[in-house]
Image (tube, rainbow, N blue to C red):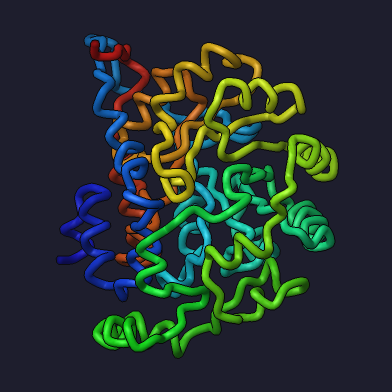
Length: 369
């Protein structure tokens, strides 16, 4: 299977599975417990029908939107995801350059493998930083200040990952950051020589946004669950979120809001946007899909705050359905991570180009039943 054979996101997933060691693939692909919520995130879009309006004149189509104060050529954000240089040696650099080529918002994680400063200098594309609140308040303050100095356009505070979800695939594989070669996983790494050589011979793995404060930033192997459960601040409250918004002073979003009550609280603390998200099903299995919550939240706070539907997006029509249901835009991580793992920057660019074939704003949406 070649990159040219990839015609949808599932094709990129299959190619990524062929090219990655199974512990690495399972880290991208896996979710919490039975992974029912992960499946539901995409499946939810099937319960909505599109009813097109014909003879609308589509010789010239403008798919651009304004999101968080910046123009985006598509109503799509490439969501921040961690550890990208584990999946492909180009990592966040590939995603940043692809986003700039297509004029899209994209984000990097606190657990990014390329620094805030490098990404800030690399592209002029609108940039979002995903902040995990650590127990080390000095680290939190340092990351906010670095984002300000690097001229990031927004910070998204992650509010659904105060403790780690039960990711059983990672527990079975023993996946760590950086990957640790164990007897059970050694064969998987050995039979993927291209990945192994890139990982061993190219730039040394690091988490440069953390390395001034915690040992995990220096390349020490640690499980993601262990990191979340020991390093993140479990005492975080709405008061914490409000203080971070004030400390940042710029465009501010909450990532991981799923209820109407929390959406209203986000409005009250002065957030500019909420990302309706269940962390790709990686935290609480049994959670509803973001798309299933979208209408209810739009009815409650639409017009008061920007609403981003995050998760499960695999098609351009999924983005369209989110827009028709009232979202400002859609966003997702796996939709480009599979492509990154499969082929680096050319893969990400091809994935975006495929999603770009979404219909124009000519249609209505209705629920079955």
